[in-house]
Amino acid sequence: MTKVYCYSKCSTCKKALKWLDDNKLPYQVIDIKEDHPDEDTLRKLHKKSGLPLKKFFNTSGMLYREMELSKKLPDMSEDDMFKLLASDGMLVKRPLLVTKDQVLPGFKEDAWKEALQ
Image (tube, rainbow, N blue to C red; front, side, top):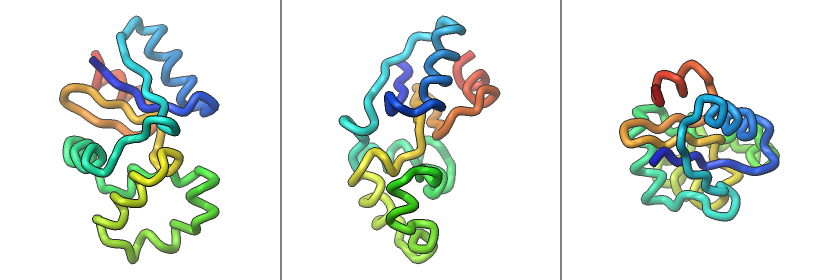
């Protein structure tokens, strides 16, 4: 089953879920704020994605800006980045699409279409 980590107040998440509904694609929603991925899960998702770890950070989020992570991330170890991401779901880029074969942070319709159809 396709999983989508979302935040209910996020407009991009709402757009992604609408796209899934419009295309009649089954999915399970996981509240990224209440049930965010732990460090082990994030490590597995990152490996499966093949993307740089920095792509998993919600760079437009309030918490990211408050913590001034744009200045801190370049000097952080990968272990520290995983710990930080696992500490608060609001730091994770959303929606986070997890399929059997792929992991896609953020909503880009073309990429989701390719991953799901």
